[in-house]
Image (cartoon, rainbow, N blue to C red; front, side):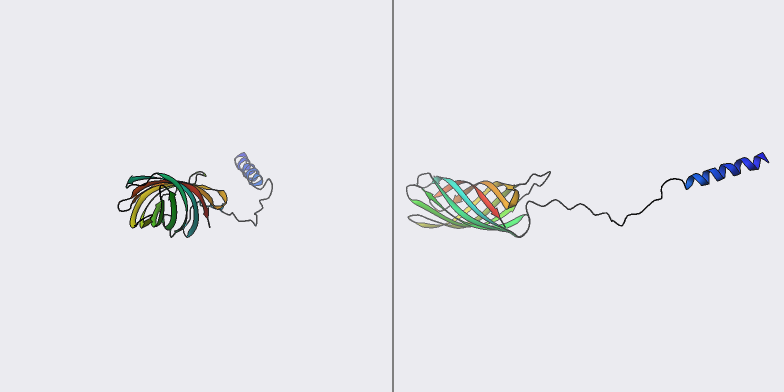
Length: 176
């Protein structure tokens, strides 16, 4: 009889303890994935640039000088954009540049860093006492601030007939 009673008591004890404790209550709330971090650099981005510059004449007879300009850029994708800008540099004679560029940027958005090195190239026109077509190439770095603002610095080389020049530009960017 002990051989039957001992397993029976052990089985009843285990079954009773399986129902012990608080009842399990399920919640109506479903799990939501956290919102993705906001991207610093986006596709279909419109930008307005305001910059200062210093230009050095590498070929020609103009002095070096300071100046400034305005630009507008539009990024078709996160990495590819187009831009137009105009600038003036005060040398022995004012040198005006108007140019269009193709821009390729390489955003770094890791751990709150919002940097974008970029390269650009294009063409335009340069005028002072004479007018000449120009080609340019260069590169730069943009640091994106919160609320749609950025700071940038870049260098460009202009081939413009007999008046080639190098420009160092730094400025402020508003992003829409």
